Image (cartoon, rainbow, N blue to C red):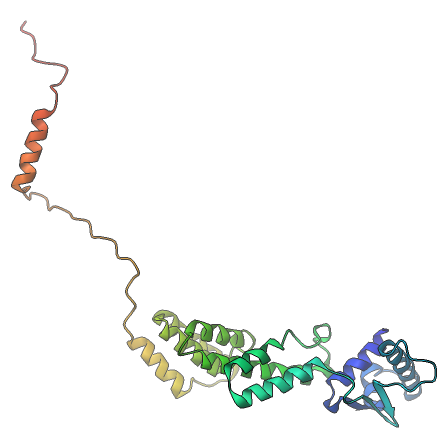
Length: 268
């Protein structure tokens, strides 16, 4: 598919309702061209896109997937499936129900960044941001749902959120809570300071009272005992006498030791 035709299809895929006015498409794809030239380029792109989507379509037959209705261009509802729409629908349903299996299944539909080849294209930013926020909501609900039974999994979900949104306080709070539940007091205190710095740098605010309460709990918690404590070495103070049994063993050992090779000194 030629680049202009591919951009046309992607524009419609991310547009609300998968519908755009011709002038909107022309302003995105050919912003420097005059109206006549842009309209001609759009006709070429539209023809190429239609034949790429339906290569077996007979000549003069009506196109099914990419529809032109006067000044409006659209993807045919019911005939064209957009995976981002399916992920969004599953996410909203799972968030509404709040059940862990549905939340996990919905998260699995978010398989990567939307249109990574168009990462800096302004026309894709709104839809990309919308899907990213939905994914974060799924991760946060999963993190909260695993706090009691699997705090290590809760921590992993919270860390995924923070990788993309360092100032998301709820993710920090869940992570601090998960670390405390695992007995990782020092890491919990450190995470609080990471949270406070991120909130100050990005939003100019302090942590919420709920986060401060977790911080105080982390400071008050007793540190976990070490997994293995080596046995203390026994040191005998200088000048201390050995026990009688030890002295007897030492004398017995000296008596059994063979005489040195020199023997008595000869008389001169």
